[in-house]
Image (cartoon, rainbow, N blue to C red; front, side, top):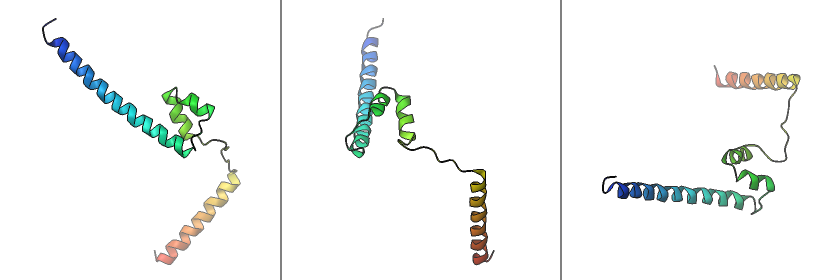
Length: 96
């Protein structure tokens, strides 16, 4: 190995390490912020999610304790017709 190459590799690795530590600090600050919003409580599900990065994203997206509301086709149709009526009234008032 030529002289100086080991020093160059060490510099690159130290530089990379420094920036990775900065990223880790930023991520930890975000985690602390979310935990403070939760009142400092960490649920077992959230603790498990912190172990795997992909699970962390999933835990943030899905609301906890709520089921997804499902509308019947008839309800969707009523809502769509009501919205169309509102837009028609808006356009009429606007003068289109």
